[in-house]
Amino acid sequence: MFKKILIANRGEIALRIIRACKELGIEAVAVYSDVDRESLHVRFAHEAYHIGEAAPNESYLNIEKIIDTAKKAKADAIHPGYGFLAENSAFAKRCEEEGIPFIGPTAESMALVGDKIAARQTVEKIGGPLIPGMTAAPDNIATFVKQAETVGYPVLIKAAMGGGGKGMRVVRSKEELEKAIEFGRREAKSAFGDDSVYMEKYIEQPRHIEIQVLADHHGNVIHLFERECSIQRRYQKIVEESPSPALDNETRQKMGEAAVKIAKAVGYRNAGTVEFLFDKNKNFYFLEVNARIQVEHPVTELVTGKDLVQAQIKIAAGEKLPWEQKDIVQRGHAIECRIYAEDPDNKFMPSPGKVEFLMEPAGAGIRLDSGLYQGFTIPVHYDPIIAKLVTWAEDRERCIDRMIRALKEYRIVGVKTTLKFLRQIMEDKRFRNGDFNTHFLESFEVKPEESDLGKIAAIAALSEKLAPISHISQNKGETVKSMWKLIQRQRALG
Image (spheres, rainbow, N blue to C red):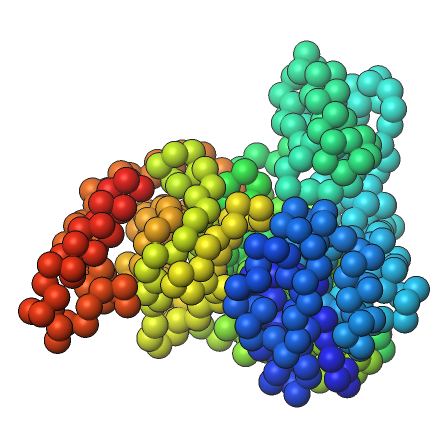
């Protein structure tokens, strides 16, 4: 087993990995940029090293700085978390060249699944469930026109490399096709340095369902069932849950078996997900492989009772999976809401700034993965996700009710967040009935809510910035003044 692991990431996922390391008796090494000096992951780690300026290219995306820091710290391995370098095959390759174990898949399999066309070709060879479309990225428009006529409109233009909706365009007629291809190529080149695009049949109103897999270095591969990820905004997941309300046991088993087969075909190792689209006729199609731990991994941990991050570390250290497929069962229901520092009332613009007051939800069946604390300044330089709130209950209805209660308890003052937005999703009748797909948020309207100054005042009274209640009589003027400042600040924030 490793003695010391460097975590090449920041925020809540770095903190999550640090905690897993501590439980395994492993020393955790943090890295941080200029603006993350006071972050929780720096405070919780055994050691911490400054790696550069706030800009990701100068710090968390700088491969050589991270490799050099791992050597300086004498780390036995590197865990990339998610985002930043987690799916960068060049980084995994550099770790291999330096003899530093990379806690994730091999560089070779990462490169394979990162190339969507190569991944489709592999799935086609094993007879996996593929969306009709191309298994190559042609240069001439005529080939696209012919393929579109074969599969039928609408079709989807996609970048061969990368993800996140970049280079993606829905085309509903021949007249739109050429412009969509040109746009897709330009955006793909800008985002991924590769302008290759290909075409698939566009699946109308699908659900997005992923299967969690674990694979060791001894040929053992298992799945840990599915996560429903259809509540998305701009191709980014917002809410995830398990089990999916759309799947019956037969389909669930077939999807799990397909995911394991695909993972074996690409030579996958460690934790990852095999992503599928699920249509209204209950057909499912391979979408892609995500070669890392997922943001939403706590959902699976709560319904299976398995620690995925610890499993990652043990696999990378050469251990065999301690479970067989028959050992993995789903129990109860779990839902995750991603909390963003964004303003739902202003087109979800980022809302960086200082957290003036923080009150976190608690109680049975609640898990909060967060890097926040009162007084922390959320930087503008990184993804605005600040926390993940996860609830578990015996069934879906009670799990939703528990999430609503937790979201109402959660107080973050000083920045705008998506707490209100997420609560309204939970309360939506279509969501509660499980009647949704990836287009759910396109018709969802965030309802404005009046600020409750009484609640804000109550929160202010609890703040450490104010005098204790026992001293209000002596310091009444200062208490009221401080409370009023906080209320005025909240009004200014809307």
